[in-house]
Structures are given as structure tokens and as C-alpha cells.
Length: 130
Length: 475
Image (cartoon, rainbow over all chains, first blue to last red; front, side, top):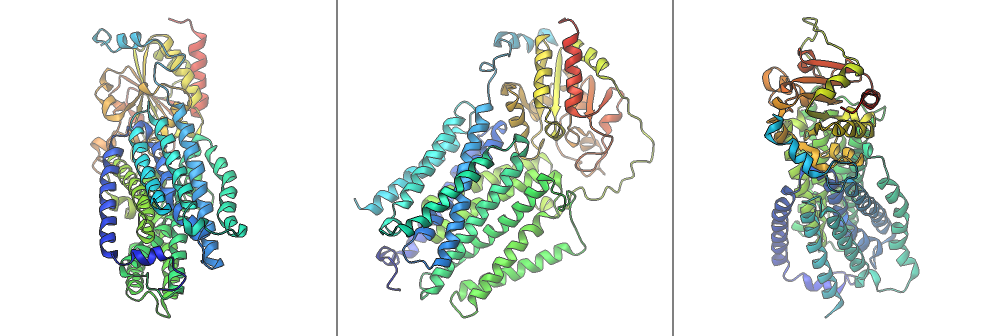
């Protein structure tokens, strides 16, 4: 251990093996949840879904802040962190904004202004039309 | 409670909100709530991280600048990138994958050199494996996504067509083998004198992998490539989570990774191709089949004639493709939709999963033109209705309505699920030119007896149709 390493990290070293396994658990469960949740997203929304997950994966910002703002990192390393922080922050801002911008556009029959009333479209699908 | 516990709990809340965010994306009605939940979660995560003792516990202003200056600098490009036209969304998405990859790669590199500069005690084989995976995936995603973005943007010096050379796969496999050897050496010996050089060489290889993987992939496969790169960016974040011992990163990265995985599976299924085939198949480069064997002829129709037939229809299905997006015709299409609806005609849009240039691209473009999403119908749903459809209007779509996919075993797209436009009573196909489509394949649909071609820019042709319909009496 170097003297500069935070005490917390030193403490975390003891049960390291256990912690690795628990991280693998988290990874596995989160993947299953992700697959379950995302399979239910309709194809209609796949583009906004992608820009949303894009913004979510910019969670790399956490690592970037730690490196850029951490106490005893030498300047060249901080610089890498700062660039990473810039890149992930750009993703966060543009990802969420464009997701919302696209989602605002999706309107159902009822919400659309010029569309005919729903009862008529129900008529059209009836067997009389065949 | 210690500050660290509070921060960990904040991460827990953020992780839960990320899951809920994707859950709410399941339904268009709650989707905006989903985006909001994601935003909130990210805000919590950023604030909690800045509040970490190792980041916030110093009074030196210069040190805080290391965090706040990059954040402030990101605001303008972030906003700018969120305002691109919707036709450019695929490029933007690819570009943000590149940024995500860059961030992951740089953080991994920074962590490695920081720890290697100490006594290297933190660089256990497990952590080192995670760093290697993070850095390789990160930098590979960076260059791969940049090439994908350039191809989507149709930058001149990047060929749209697959770029292949003899022995390409051998070169790729050799390079991959070298990367594996370097990776294993680093995991075993993270702090030897040569290790930083090996690490640099690994970064160099990863950067090359990215473009080597995407250059041979043609424009028609871009939806799949974008989805795969999405998964890579997510997995890079997961690896970073392992490196930093941070479960929020693992959860968010896993959500992103599984989203990319599912989308790429959907895309591959929609093209009846395997992952391996997309990555190594170099689709659509050479069209060996001679088209000119027999001279087949098109029948062209004028907008006047087409408008008359459209007026008589009771059910119209419009099949949009990327041609519609290129021509920016979505608003004209909305006018056409209104004209037909006014006459009591049932109008629906048949959306093929790979129509457009990224998953769901067509839906967004049509939603922009305020076409209600109830009338955007998925391929499987509409195909059963196609025989009852009076007029099928193919707007800038090509391969997704090519009946060769059902019948012609020699066709490169054989087996790909298509929209059965050829089963409608009458087909109008709007096409800019007589050239084959993105995949470079000739389309049988255009030669059928019931098919009439409307040549011209999609926007101009649809505009002409609208004019004809608006000019004629209501019913």
C-alpha cells in the first residue's frame, strides 16, 4: 500500500474475493433485468430507447469525475479524466435532451388534432369493409 | 451514517431509477416519465460522486476546476448534438457511442497508469482483466463508431460500400490473437518494466480493431452495427464498474449492454442473418447475378393517375423507407395521410424493423410529422392484411419489399422477412432513380403487372399526389 491510498480502499482489500463475486452477482442480475425490461419496449420507441440507454451508459461519468477530481492523481492522468468527463457529460446532456425531444413527438390517435374521431376508425376495421 | 454510506445509498437509488426509467420506456404513454427518471438518476449519480470525500475534500479551487470546467465545456456541444435533424439521429447515436467508448477507454488507461505508478498492489489479476476489457472495448467502440458515423453521414472519403481485401479475416484474427497475448501478459505481469509499453500497444491494437471491424460492413447493415456498438459501450461501462468497485456502473452498463444485445438480435432476425455474418460477411459488395439477362420493363404512372386510383381505395398501406427520410418527405406524407383520411380511407404505415438507418428510425420520422403512432404498424401485423389492401404505396423503401426474399434462393436477401407489398391489389412504388437499393439488389416487385412506378424525388411525388387529391372534390 502506498501511503497516499485512501484508508477506505485499504480496508476494502481484505474481503476482496467476496466483493468480486458480489459484483458478478450484480452484473448477472442487472443483465437479466435489462433483458426483461427492454424486451417489452415496443419497436415504435427503439430509437429513443437507444438514445436513452446511450445517456445511461454515460454513467462512466462517475469514473471520470473520480479520476479528474481525485486527490493525488498526477496531472497527465487527471487530464485523461477531464477529457473522459467532457465526453461523458456531452453524452448525458445530448442523450437525455434528444430522447425527450423525440418522445414528445409520439402522439396517439386521440391526442393528434386533425385525426378523425376514434369511433370512425373502429368502423373502418369492421367486416363491412372487406 | 457516514458520508460514504449516504453516497452508496444515493447510488442505489440511482440504479433503481435507471431500471424504472427503462421500464417506463415500454409504453409511449409513460415514456417521457422514463426519460425524466433517467435524468434524475444521472443527476443523483453525478452529485453523489462529486460529494465523494476523495473528490470534494480539499479547499483548493484549482482542483475543483478539474471537475467543473469539463462539465461546463460539455454543455454547448451536448445541446448542439441534441438538436440535430431527425434524419441525422443515427449519426448522432454513433457519435455518442464513440464518446462513451472514449470515456471508458481513458478512465481505464488513467487507472492503470495511476496504479502502476504506485506499487501496483491494486492491480490484481481480476482488476487487471477488467481494465484490459474496459480499455479494449472502449477504444474499439471509439474508432468503430466514428467510422459508422462517417458512413451514415456519407462522408466522402469513407466508402459506403463494404471495404474488403484479400485475407482480411486472417489479418483480423492475427491481430486479435496478438491482443489476447498482450492482454494475458499484462494480467500476469501488470508492473514489469515492459508493461506500460504492452498497455500502449494494446490501446493501439484496440483503436485499429474498431475501424477494421466496421469498414467491411456495408451501409445496409448499419442498424445492426449501431446496436452492437451500443452493447460494447455498455459492457465497457460494466468493466469500469469492476475496476472502480462501483455497482451503479455495473447496473447501468448492464442495462445498456442488454439493450444493445436485444436490439442487435432484433435487427439480425429482421435481416435473417447471424451476428457472424454481419460482422464478417461483407454484405452487398458484389452483385454477381447479371441483371441484364432479359430486359424487363417498368410501367410508369403519372401522379394524376395514381391520385385517381388512391381515391377509389378503401384501404391504403404506405411502406416508408430511408428514401423518405433522405427526401425529408415526412411532412408531405402527413398531408397525403390527411387527404386520404378525409375521404374515409383507412391508411396505415407498414414499418419494417430495419427500415431507416437505425432501429425505430422510421417511427421517429413519422412521429415528427405528427402521424399518430396507432397507425404505425409492425411488419408481422400488417402482412396478414396485405391481400385486403387496395393500394400499397412504397415510399423510398426497396429491399424490405423485395419478394425475392421469399422466392429466390440465390438472392443475398433470401429468407429475410419482408412486407408483402406484392400481395396488395395495386402497388405504387416511388423511386428516385432506376438504380438498385442500398443492398445493391434488383427488385422483382417493380416488374409485376400490378405495379406502377412513380419516378422522382419522394417529396416531390408525394407533394404532387397531395395537390391532385386536394384539387379534386372530396368524394
